[in-house]
Amino acid sequence: MESEQKNIPAMYQQLVVIWIALFNSQILFFVLIYFSSIPFKIQPRGSFLGNTPVATIVFAVISVALVGASFIFRSIFYKRSVNEQKPEMVKTGLIIALALCEGTSLLGVLSAFIFRYEYSFAFISLAMAGMVFHFPLRSTLINATAARRIRTERTGLRTECR
Image (tube, rainbow, N blue to C red):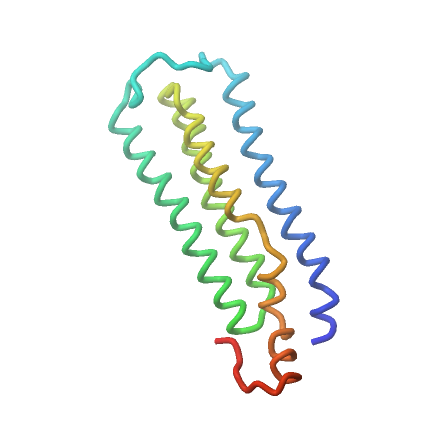
């Protein structure tokens, strides 16, 4: 139990590095689209649905579903990490959540390259917004360790987190 407490700063640092790496990949997607051969305009002039409205709507629905699912999966893994007192599950939940948000960005890149969709940066922006809300918190690691049980035993309370 004591070793888990000492590992919290290192584990938190890992989570932040993972988050920064995946967040920066979103910026690289912006750069990729901007400098590609696609006529990317800062002020798009076409219709919001582009040349292929059905594909755009399908991609938009899938993107919103992916970002929504990222919050659900992260919540599931965070609750399991607290109930089972396994801080490794916090990392798993974060990686799955960020990967789902990354899928939204990839749909934006696909729409830019395949459909020449001028508003493809909206998908990447949605993914970045989701990732901002997934920034790792140290408290989730603390809750997932035995620290809460130790504190409740010292104070004499019989309740455990479940």
